[in-house]
Amino acid sequence: MNHFYVIGLRRRKGWVIIIALALFTSLLIWTQRDAVISVFSNEKPTALSKGNTDEPAIALTFNISWGEERALDILEQLKDENVQATFFVSGEWAERHPKILEQISEGDHELGMMGYRYKSYLDQDIEQVRKDLLYARDIFKKLGYEDVNLLRTPSGHFNEEVIELAESLDFDVIHWNINPNDWENPGTSVIVDQVMKDTSNGDIILFHASDAAKQTAEALKTILPGLKNKGFQPVTISELINQAHAETNPVE
Picture 1 (tube, rainbow, N blue to C red):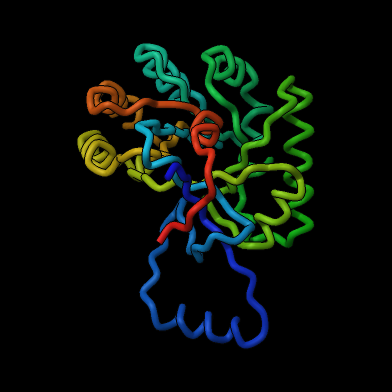
Picture 2 (picture 1 turned 45 degrees about the vertical axis):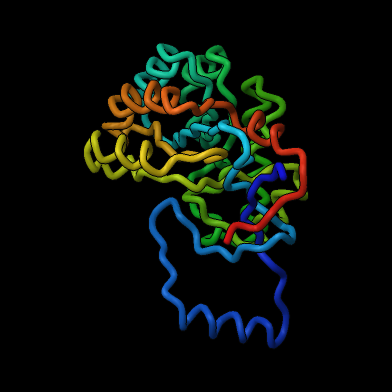
C-alpha cells in the first residue's frame, strides 16, 4: 500500500499523562541538536518525517538561519547535478539575504520557513510562537513569496500545542528521518558515508546551508551522483507529499 509516515503527538489527559511520564522516565530516550523527543501515532496533530516507501523518491532539505557563503556553494552543486531541493530559511535570514532567496527560487528549488527568529518554540509561550509565525509569513509576502506553507520548527523542536497552532495557520510541519549532522563538520567522508548507507525510499534528509556547515557542499559532490546511481530520485517536499495518496501510518 502506498503511504507516507508522520510524527504524531497523541492527546493525553489525567492519568494517561502520569503513565506517559512514568514511561518516559524509565526509557532511554535520545535527543540532540536538530532532533526532538517525540511520541509516534496515527492521530493528529502530525509532522511529516518520511515519504512513500514504495517509491524511490527522496527529499533533500537544507536549513539556513545565518551566513551566505555555504548557501551559494550548495546551490552551485545542486545546479551542476540538476537536483531540486527544499530550503527552510528563517524570516530574519530572508530579510538580510533577498538575493540568495531569489537564487533559490530561480533554481526551481522549493522554499519553506523556520519562523522569523531562529529560537526553539519550546522555549516560548504559544502566543509568542503565533506572533513569530505570522510575522514570518508577512516578511515572506513582502519579499514576494506569497505561498510559503511548509514549516520546519527551529531545531526541529515541537510539541502537540505547536503543531496544532501551525496547522490552524495552514502550515504543513516537516521533520526528517536522515540526519548526518553536517553542521558538526565531522568530516566529508563521514557525511557521505552516513547518507549513502542510511538512505532508503521516501527519506527526508536534513542538511544545513548556514555558514557553520563547512563540509556540506564538498560532500554533495559525492552524495548527489551517488544517490542517483543507487536509483533514488531527488524531489521537493511537495512532490514527496503528492506521491503519497493513501492513508498515513505511524513511525515505530
